[in-house]
Length: 208
Ligand SMILES: [Fe+2]
Ligand SMILES: [Fe+2]
Image 1 (tube, rainbow, N blue to C red):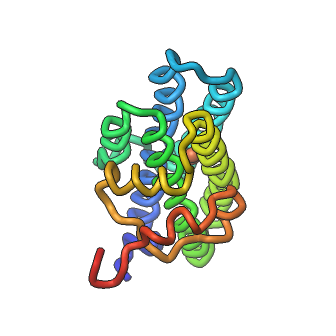
Image 2 (cartoon, rainbow, N blue to C red):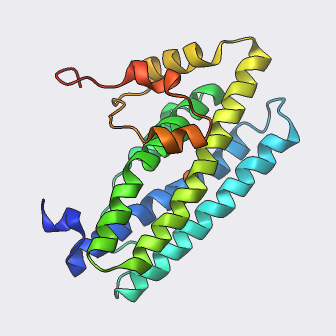
């Protein structure tokens, strides 16, 4: 495994923390975007309260990582970063159900799949401070997936749509990537996100 991915070197650690800080910064924007972009729709007050609470947690995540980067003499903005999350925001700006299907229930759920391994690696290289920040993020992100799942199902119910089939159709039509196993079924289940949703769309070997 390359050192950069292992996070064992100083540069590798900074690269990892910077990449996650970038995701959290986008997550702040995405949470406020769902509040503002869909404000004209007839949604319960609780919908907006929930996403404002998510935005506040994403801001805490970003602040923790930003401070940790500072411990390494680095800062957010030192490294280039990809634009994938914001592209997902643009691709799903036309429809609230599509936004909920893709952002919390593909992208944030993917975070639940990969974070435990990052925590293990950070513990292994003797960086419990960074590992603990990721533990905190991981716990909160289960809540974000749960919020996305709850509102996805509620809005499907309001529109008289079957939730599982609708999610699968929206992902097939609007998500360009693949759903990569292995999935963290336990964390996803804690968010009420049942494998019946995503398992049938899992990328197969030879059919990525
Ligand atoms: Fe976050
Ligand atoms: Fe999140």
